[in-house]
Image (cartoon, rainbow, N blue to C red):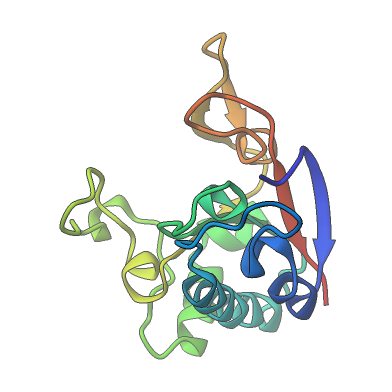
Length: 173
């Protein structure tokens, strides 16, 4: 759905975009779930606000949300951060001081199952249906068609289903 490229948008622009309101000029799907997509964007805005409050400014969103899926499961994304701040636990602590549900963690031990989903999900997913990962130059765990492990910027610009290049949303103020 979102052609390859980086699309820098505000939350108001995102809410008015094809990603939320749906395709126009073609036969629109009667199952397009714009209200669910708006709710995801509202949740994303809440988490982005928290990230900005602790000094994080480069934040990207994608996943099935940027694909032609009428009802995406969630919004995935990443943000650029300092390794030292992440490794020390300072970033997680500062974010959890802002979030009433204390969902900021990437510890695999905190993942929980959700009915009908094959993989366990992070606390932020269970609360907000958003998964935002810290990026400091590390591999993502996702490989390309040749088996090379990709960093988040490259991995998040490819569809996991078929490896096709896709667009990504960069959140601007």
